[in-house]
Length: 149
Image 1 (cartoon, rainbow, N blue to C red):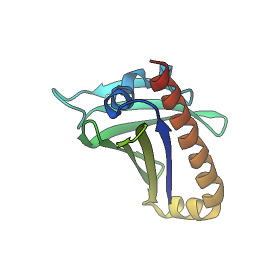
Image 2: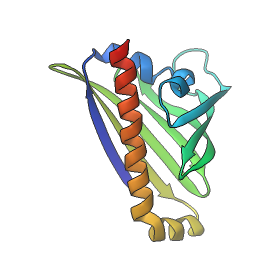
Image 3: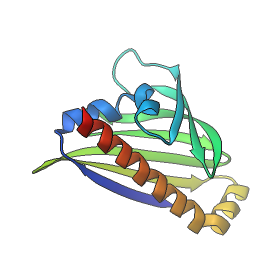
């Protein structure tokens, strides 16, 4: 399952990157993220940064461990998480536009276990809709944080 969403932001890519790459401060900027706890920090850059993120999903708190697998400042980073037999990847991309920047989020969930495959098949429309809403909400919050700075 894949979901992509984007928002245009009236700020240069470096300003957008400064917000989206400061993962430990996202709880104060993105309403859906309740808490971020660093698990492992690389000596330099983002690749290898690992954290525990608590979000509000389906009316409940859910915590997942995520880590950065690829990054190229200030254009993108990719994060990965594994939960209940599903591998989740998200690509956060920042590109230049005539009026500022475009922030794009691409999310993909790939079930690995049989139970996860069955669950995803049965609940695909609900999961896709909830994920699309979460991405749009996150993008709106990041836009507001960047443009207010």
